[in-house]
Length: 200
Image (cartoon, rainbow, N blue to C red):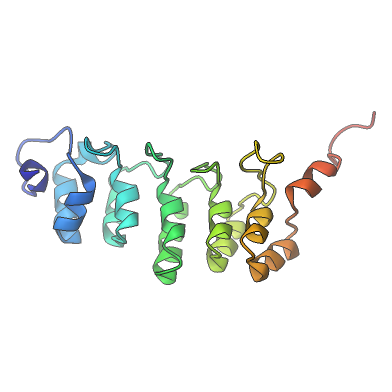
């Protein structure tokens, strides 16, 4: 791991063993210096667990590193082999760090993260926000155009909309807000004729 811990310019590196270890072993400023010295690594999965720097920086709540990675061209929609997206990881921080979660979601979406990109288990960002009862995050995503009718997990009774997820987890206040915004359950959506379809 010694080579991965180096933060001087040195020879340009083409792979890194573990983003997790680097992010935990160094300060944010040291990590940023390392990234600037080795920009080729920004979009490279590590060799230990196929993790990407951006998602791991979000997971470890390193906002300055997240911003630096985006400045260096990190792809905000990279999906690791566990089905995790940086945006979804930011949403999952809400329970313990709601303010930071909202800041990171805002940053990622502003910098190009696809709010409709699917992560495990076939969730969009709004599905994920509804699963963890992140009301402010859900409202931000809706404001930025998140689909209220996107169906996740189509293999489960035809899929679940964000409203279905909120109701499954008994997040009643969030479900009520979603309904006020026009959200419907998957059953309601599938039962409604397409308004734009021509008459038979």
